[in-house]
Image (tube, rainbow, N blue to C red; front, side, top):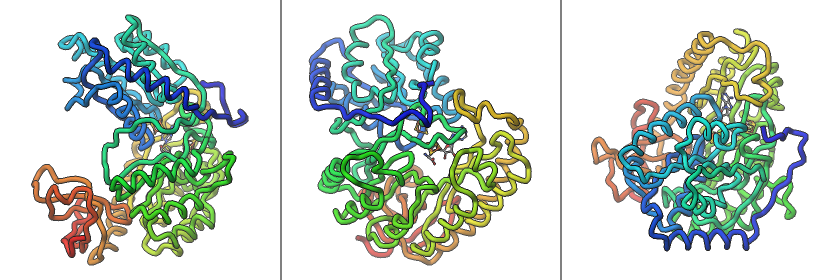
Length: 475
Ligand code: SAH
Ligand code: SF4
Ligand code: F3S
């Protein structure tokens, strides 16, 4: 492990301009090299934070003069931005990295790099060196801002380059190549201080640190000027935004400031129930541009399990916050993360989770089987649940959520919704899909000109957990 735990004092370093300048110079040197790869492809696993990191990595690759290849088979440089939150995420990444070794047989010049959370896992760099020696570069989440220098080192070195520091950093002003222009990710904080006993994130992403509010507002202003319709604020626990900043700031205050800027749609993830304040609930009700949706991971519905997960709330407190949110924002779209088969979970405790999911009635839920992660406290707990019981529990949970979801979604029938159109349906070519204000996916008749625009619809049906809309007025 990084040798950190909840008693380690948090500390972080803002990367000074000279260091970023050195990276820009490295990028310029790479651009003028004849022996550099011409094209890249980034393969991303994991959460939105990783997706945004990939946008920053792609931004730096473009600075180095590379252009994006249509797929990984035809790229000269492939970067795997990995996740390790569950064992299957890790296995998938390792499987795909191995498969690329075959591609190299046809394309001997292919360079392969691995970064992200899995690379930052203790012992992983050594494992990659041993078992995946064909990988050219490995770097951790704390080295993202040094990518050009590491890339240059890789070009100059026959042996794999490995750089997995554990310093907690904040880097401002990195080049970014956004996947979508109309809906942009904005990180507001990094790392996590919560140390939920099952979770590896604090170990691979470091201690919690926030960006200065002025830097976030500047980024949002730029996005607004370039036509963004929506910004998604990112952090492992956005509700605790601002802790440790010299200039006093908190999440409700940040939301109010962004609301005043006039970004048409503001969303955020993820919220930790223990830090969901009355003031945040008030802002949800008052701020015009903050969308009526809330992702509030519950993890479990049983108090004893929640305590052993180190979640710092109980079932009733959680439900009280849900009620308060619904009162402040009638019809709010609620989503969650739920886990089954935490060590020692009994059938009765699992039934508490089922009854909570039934009681809340979520618009959608991400459901997971607990996966032991080396170095976390829960991995050492007695009572690890056998896979057949875990499977049975998740199936019952999914069945319940599916049934509740259909009922919950029916509330939209006949209602008007505003959809930010994300994509053209590949199948029909005459349908588009996007997200409503409450966070649900909606399909509607349309064409490629609609992509990136906000369109009003009347909801006429529900199909496979997606709402179906008819167009009303073009906006
Ligand atoms: N910071 C966010 C989410 C982080 S990871 C939060 O606290 O809600 C996303 C989800 O993955 C978690 O909410 C949790 O449900 C799940 N998860 C994390 N560690 C896990 C593990 N070891 N096994 C199974 N699911 C896990
Ligand atoms: Fe993991 Fe808990 Fe932090 Fe979320 S809040 S990232 S689940 S430790
Ligand atoms: Fe995975 Fe890292 Fe996100 S472990 S869930 S990519 S923070």
